[in-house]
Length: 267
Ligand code: BTN
Image (cartoon, rainbow, N blue to C red; front, top):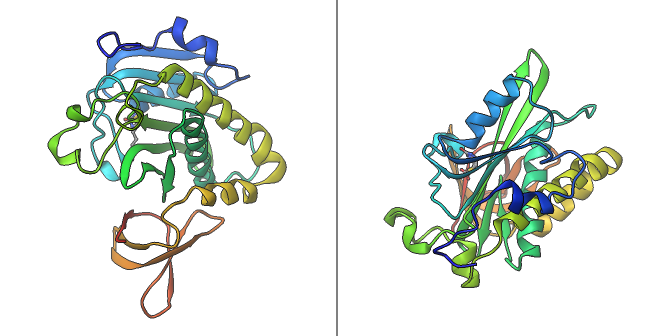
């Protein structure tokens, strides 16, 4: 695979790796769009089924967490999955953790030692290599669907990152010094996701998933700064609860549970 002939994601290249029952059996391929999450939500509104995937070579208005812009040049893996899980008492935050774990498992299969930073950033060392944005549509108290948006800097050239990201972001290409097949990564994420959603979560619950998630959570035990909508907090990241909250122990030994925010590792 050469960089001048990128591995454009087409049906022919991707379908051989979709070894799932439901996820990715219905895929929409785009060269360019605003955001795969936005298009996936439109498709979900029109009734596209559970497991539908929208993938794009580039996004013009990729969405990050907390209203940020997600830089999405060619070479990255930008996609969204529509989920309509039929699971009693599903806790939506758990889906975010399953997404992170599925991504980590696929990245590690490709030889990338990816780790997780709460709530769901994908890191290699101290540089961010991917992120996940989960959006939900509710109908009163019922969840109608979830859109899980996953962005991974797979074959993004480091020189293509904007100046402000160059110190903070990396790509699989930069780490491995050679391109990695996006079709294989996509297929492996969907396989891992389906196993978590259809087998592990309904049969064993969230505990074993959180246990493995924590194994890859490199920030646990580190001093962190957490910025939330109500202020910021510094301390040691000591745990993640079964509801997905981050526990930070401050200098006085008080443990604070944070359910949403941004984590920066201090040392
Ligand atoms: C974050 O870390 O801030 C989350 C980034 C999520 C980016 C992905 S790329 C595919 C999908 N479509 C979007 O617009 N966003 C997500």
